[in-house]
Length: 223
Image (cartoon, rainbow, N blue to C red):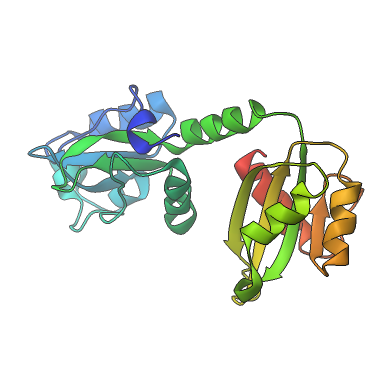
């Protein structure tokens, strides 16, 4: 299981309110990243991003940025699961995630690109298999039922990802990674139970316009 403390980078420095702008911009250029965590007395107080310095008196360095700093509320605990870190990225569209304890003491930072590389590695290491995605009413979603139907065909679910359908909050999209390339029997079982399959690796094309969004999701997760 991957948690936040296992994903900390060793290459991204933190800065303080007294850090010069020359130093900040040199980090931006050297590291090809436009966000840096700001630490004061070992506590995380927010991020500074390149746009924060537009139209400001740059002679005062980081302290010239108005408080509160950008994404002051964006952080995770050292024990936060990788998938919860992904939700932070989706919600706040950040390129780094500071890691702090319950007293807000700074432990380090996760670089989102590195985290996504880790997600890709995790799924690449899995047993070869296929992806199937279903659109289900949230009140009727049951992983237990889906598992039973899948396993009735001697197939196993390797992983499952659930998201709310952005077009209808009463629906969820369930993406399953299965341990076989031959999913026809599973698809037939889903059809028998009136499941709406909107994507399968076995399809040449998706069954509805939700395919593009599912493609984006799978690229995001590198399933």
